[in-house]
Length: 305
Image (cartoon, rainbow, N blue to C red):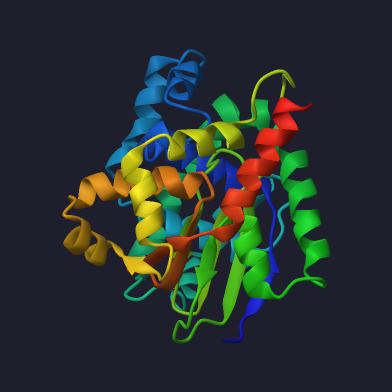
């Protein structure tokens, strides 16, 4: 399988991440920022502005695929405001032409709706929240992206993607030409992917320095939490020899889809599973051998620090 691997970094991606998490509450209980982040943000935003932002909670989640693609296609932006100004100044026809080759059944009406609806809310979100945290986040993104770019000459693309994402493996996908890796802070520790006709955007979590070295690192806490449940230990043993689909797990283990998804998410964020991707709706799971060695490394590093 041959494709072009790109490593991109921009504050605009992180703006979209934080906005999407705030308005949809998606994955929030599994993220390092935690549910309390929502209330912390709302303590600083007036109620009428919260109401304005929450309009987007009712809009299609797939809109974010379009927004992320616009960021990527329009190239590096010096700032969030530069990107939004650039997007607003583009014609609707141009916005449509950029996305149509990537998303099936995308229409010029979609382009108009998404740009006109999200642009003012993203400006509001930037003013009320993101500009206050951007200076802390951007250096982390730049540093991590630089590290991954240095590794491009030392690792093959498949290995680099798995290393960066902690377990995502791309298998044969028809028409796939480009995989874009994006570092993210708000989504930690979850990997997310946006599938397009010829491209996949993968967001992977970056390491955030500990504020208190006496506290155990989050990665160690995620691992020990994942391994503390007998059901999850049995799941790891079940996928140890070959990748399994969610359907196979339901059939062989007699577990509900909802319960399996819960346990798989905890194992995934702990870096103990490989996720084999053959398409947007085709995931299989296997054990990640590096996970056990990393557990020992983090445990020893913390205890004997």
